[in-house]
Length: 66
Ligand code: SF4
Image (cartoon, helix red, strand yellow):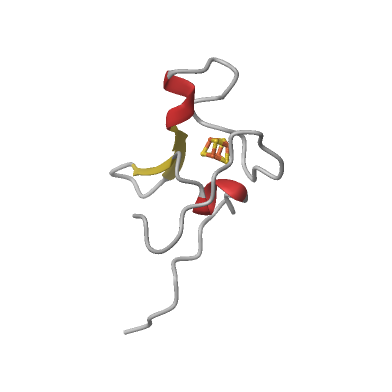
């Protein structure tokens, strides 16, 4: 068994280690990155266009988060 981290497709950019990101998977294997900041601030997209390269809401989370 591999210990490599999962290879995300599409690559999420900043959302990958942002504390406001949540990963959702469909039963068909698709992955969506949801931004919980969108719930309180309409300036953020609930499902941001990936990869996110610049974001004023980005806050890095340390260690395994999900
Ligand atoms: S705040 Fe920005 S970087 Fe963080 S999850 Fe939302 S869109 Fe992604």
